Length: 182
Image (tube, rainbow, N blue to C red; front, side, top):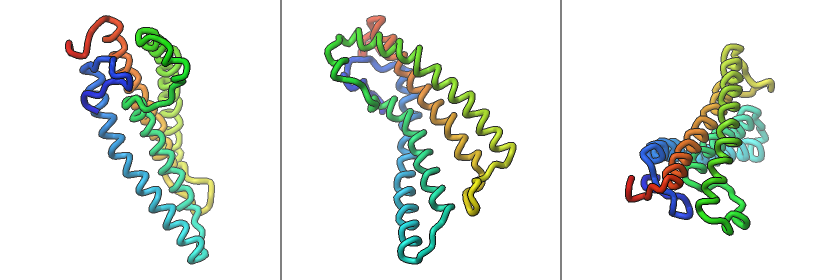
């Protein structure tokens, strides 16, 4: 991510956004290997089912666990890399200042409270699953359900960090700080 600026290239990088971007990029790059693992598990599952006539609940659950972890870890990466969905048909008509103010308001009113709520409640859910030694309800399913559930607060923590990093960039822009003054 490094010296990444927003897709419009006009928000300055800050020390916080740089550090958070590096962390989230490292996590995102490591998590990208999950997609290869997912493809391999799916291929193995297909061969087992259609060539050998053997289905596996464990492999099916492993597929959606890998997909879920990849998605959760990808949330922060997409936000930090500014690769998330926007309604550009409307926002492209606004000035950068207006878009930045709207982003600040959206992050403060919607995104950060959501991240905090999911981290708190998801953390409780993961701890409870760990304490109860929760496993799959399906016979032959995956053990250690707490492990999957622990990625929920982790993914939203990364998303929250990306949001805070973006807020620092918005604040730097709104305060008149240019990228050269970093």
